[in-house]
Amino acid sequence: MARRGRTSIVREVKESLTAIDKIGQSKRDARKTGTSGIHSKKQMANTMSDAQNFVKWCRSEHGVKSISELNAGHYVSYLAYLSEKGVSQGHRVNVETSLVGSDAKNRSYTEEEVQLIRENCSDEVTKAVELMREMGLRIKEAVNVRVEHFVPNDRGIGWCLTIEKGTGITKGGRFRQVDVPQRLEQRLESWMVNKSPGERIVNVSYSTVRDGVNVACKRAGVTQAGRGCHGFRHAYARERMVQLMPSEQKKIMNRVLENRKIGRAADYGILSEHDKQLYAAAREAMDQIHSELGHGKNRWALAMRYMGD
Image 1 (cartoon, rainbow, N blue to C red):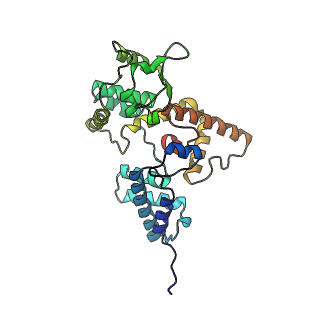
Image 2: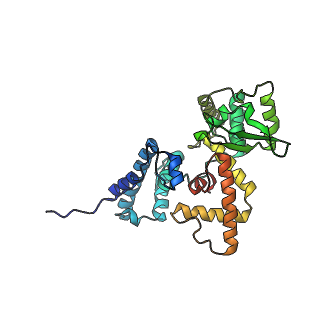
Image 3: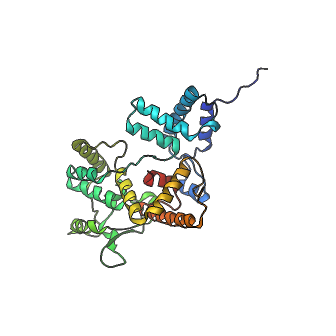
């Protein structure tokens, strides 16, 4: 009988991804039990393709025969190879998403880009852009929030978005509460004039906003590179990080995200009492930003996506 050879690295990838196949299972339940995996058929297909292409290249160029031999250097070299090959930035970002489990690049729009997009949108689409950029809302949330969801904040001198029952509005119908930034207050008040509590702020559909932003980017010469409307949420998250995290906390956050990027525990190498205090404060600020975005607590993978450099 012939001796059975070792499992190929391509098959190892398939077996590893099959082991975390959670398609059809509840993401909420998975978070409660502390388990993770891939819940989307599209994500599974993309990740399988990107990961297998990556290991084939590593096997060919570096002689890697098992995923246990892979390291961060292989990942960096592969991305450089894709760039030299002329692969588009948007596709490279998607490959990074598959290989690292997060979007490693800054996917936020700059303020200059946001302004150019505003100038090339209709009035209703611009409202949605403002809600996404200034309050971190998703497209679905921006087009479904109603006048009644905006209430005076605790200080009594501004507004707060408060959604108690988010069915049909927020992701998973979750509670959402975000203060309206002062620079948006006057515009928001003008949008609510002569509207009843049950009326929507934005009077166009999800697809109209999405398509409107795409057209605006083309008109303005703004390259989306895979950012889409989510780029506004990324910009919001990064601005909030600047507002909530002093420079020392930001440095600790970057260390943590680098740890997570290569598979280490978040607090790896954080040993001194001072650094531990900074770590705790940075995590608290991160959780606050996640809450405003409609995410749960302690979501380091999402922090890599929204707040990493």
